Image 1: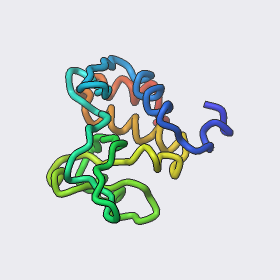
Image 2 (image 1 turned 120 degrees about the horizontal axis):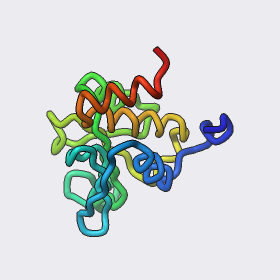
Image 3 (image 1 turned 90 degrees about the vertical axis):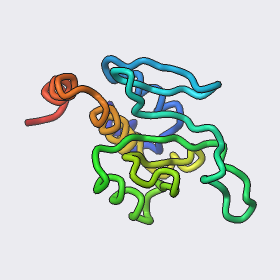
Image 4 (image 1 turned 45 degrees about the vertical axis):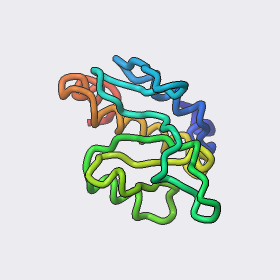
Length: 141
């Protein structure tokens, strides 16, 4: 990825591109929403509006929530507790190793940050063998 491309604001289209670039990925659909899976395990999905994620001012359900799996509760808390990030969670996701991101706020992170989030989501759900093979090929030792 070219440096200028890496540092630009992320876009929703990047989620799709980056998820599909990971190996062994299949796409299921929940209605019109894509669910990206590795080994039949979801690692990213676009969520239908639900009563637990609403605009505090209007009470309207968010229609643009993307769910990303994370490796650990510590990783989740690092993302959702840092008020400088657009990541959040809801009580519905207590105990679930994932973070939420509104598509309307995706530009608050860079494409490179999104790429790392997608890769980490994939690694958290891929088999140990697939994860180790990907890491050996893509991450410096």
